Length: 115
Length: 111
Image (cartoon, rainbow over all chains, first blue to last red; front, top):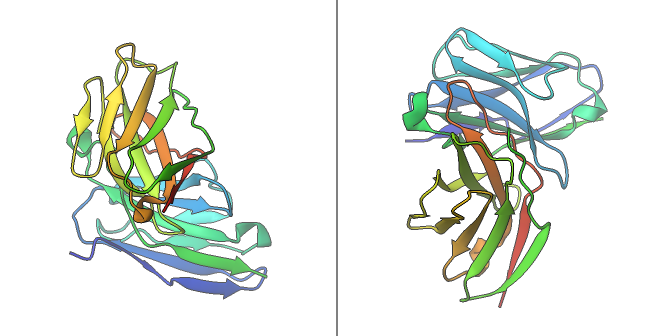
């Protein structure tokens, strides 16, 4: 099992450019989520999904779009990149229901710099 | 959600037990205590969780006070590889709930 795979690992964008961060998991987890982590800070929830076709906003959703067309994939789109979106982005997944608890499996992260 | 309070940093000698405290005085009856850690820029890693009873696994032990207002994560024999930021999170297990992470405790294990 690969777990949660994020691509790319590093990306540099110019202000105003758009891009998509990819996240894929092979554990058949229903729940997937995106977090961002600014230097020296904790993680903040951007968007999450409780299943294919269902997404919802987290704490800091502005400037980001998500979709969930399959169980495996949960891409994060930056519509018009801004320097304030310079951060490390983590994708995470877990099983649904109380049995899955809140035991998240995280990807290795995608480091984004917006100039 | 119940808020948690953790010391920003702690030191521990290699080979000794590391005891990381967490206060969660507003925890409600159906909320669990979760611990994660993040080793230098990697994705956070789940360690352990519990509701009211003490829990132990291959990584750590979790001691929850009887009134559930605080807990302690114990790494019984800390190694240099345990140097990380440790997050204590309180959350119930309702469908759709996603964890939110605070500042955590930066544990430095020293030789």
